[in-house]
Image (cartoon, rainbow, N blue to C red):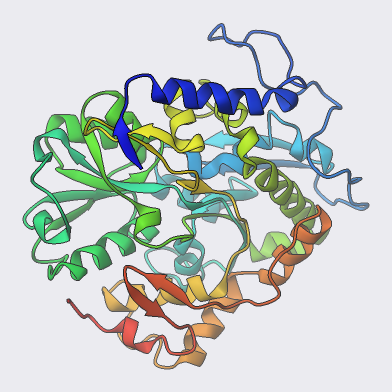
Length: 417
């Protein structure tokens, strides 16, 4: 729904804040460095399902890497809201600016576990673009939550993918849902993404600056940088990613196989903490508080109103409209193996995997199941009171086309509509 924005966004946020009031009463009142009231919980107070820590945690003190974007919400919120502590862990969060940096730290063992784009564990496990390191993804950071943002100079001139011909467009990493979604979106408009547009990697914190400088015409990127472009008057939101593929995965939580082998109880404790945090984060009444907890410099370092606009789905689009899209971002941690199969088809389709890497549905399914650890995810979600799906595969609707994981090979072909 689109309508004039005067005053509506503020009223919407007030309603959401009121709904979150009961939960917010648990927050500590000490001011943070920015002078705002802290939303962190005092030590020993816990949210989510009542559950004691697992016995026998091998490595209770851990370092977890993350990129400061809203996709990392469950990973980040588990710190100030004590989900890690609740499950017997003491976690130090380490912030990185770009995906190549965090990938290299993950491979080198500088972090015990990490926020990674969901295609990255597949690529790392296969040795695409990096050393080959067997890796597991057992929790998604988020579903939806991305957008195609274009520079303000293109307002009124872009109606669909065909209008992006000749533009320079940013994505945060080669092995990313952003790259795969953007490439397929361009192809639906009859464009070859390698000939009719220029796609280049831009670190998430640099996206708005690159837009302002004119180095790029737009990007398919993570929030809060889509909303930050609107906030600064630099751009407008052309398409939310949920409008391209409703419920698509984006980021994930990854652990090296060697870590799991040495620390199986710690691994399950981490997944319980993330599942608990994701369930809390996915509750609409908690979204304002979640935004305020993540906005400070220690985490996302963003204006709270920008993060609130993303998490609540009540936002201005940069074209004079105000939208209310409750599922702009969601936090369902279950890692569908069908999504992993689609990612692998796109790696083969666009030359990001060696030609002929996956010649059968069985080859794709085996590679997906080796990395997307649905059994561990299912156990962790159930332990904290969730209801994980019984199946590992599902049929998806992607930009008007059906993706059937039982018949994935057509998606490996380099087709343009």
